[in-house]
Length: 133
Image 1 (cartoon, rainbow, N blue to C red):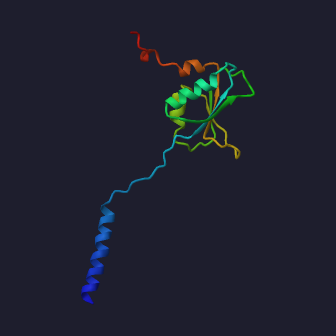
Image 2: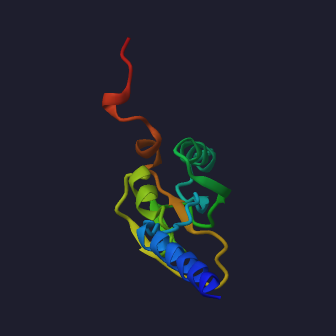
Image 3: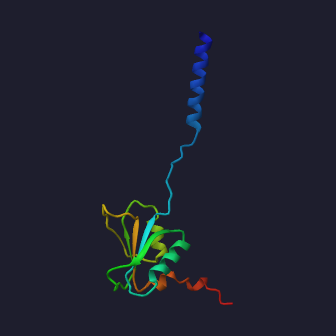
């Protein structure tokens, strides 16, 4: 009986020590996020070009279409899920500070992009990235 108690005590103490030594890792769920792109500038093909640009930069565009309004001068990022971890990266990729949060129970995406007339400046490579050869 003493031997079985000693075995049980060593087994539990051994497990307890291993648990204390093991580093605690925070599990974070990473995903690209669902994005919709709306052509709000009136330029033909803007939504398709923005979709291609965003996909090349690792974002998941789940829908793209024309918006009812076609007169936006600047691109606007509307966050539907303010806790989405990709919001800052998306704003940086869009080169915009025009970011707002509008929550809706009907929203099925993490972010909506309303393309403005500045979209070509967003999707074109930076001056330093062009190869002049």
